Image (cartoon, rainbow, N blue to C red; front, side, top):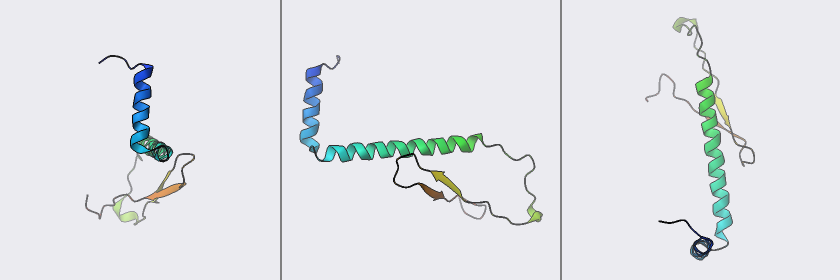
Length: 95
């Protein structure tokens, strides 16, 4: 298959506009961009979790039962929601 020339690109754009309509294309592009931002923020949060250091002395079982604070993943700039809580499995939940 050869390279696409300007005629082929214009033909592809015309077919896409005919299939989806001119009114739906901006909505599709907007939702695609939003999905990309969410994916990027989730990947960044996972990378930050991997870089956190593990405590040298793990907490002892008899010292108390403090539950860890709930984490919050920040959304990407320009996203509608600013943050959402993340529930992590505890020792009592089945994995």
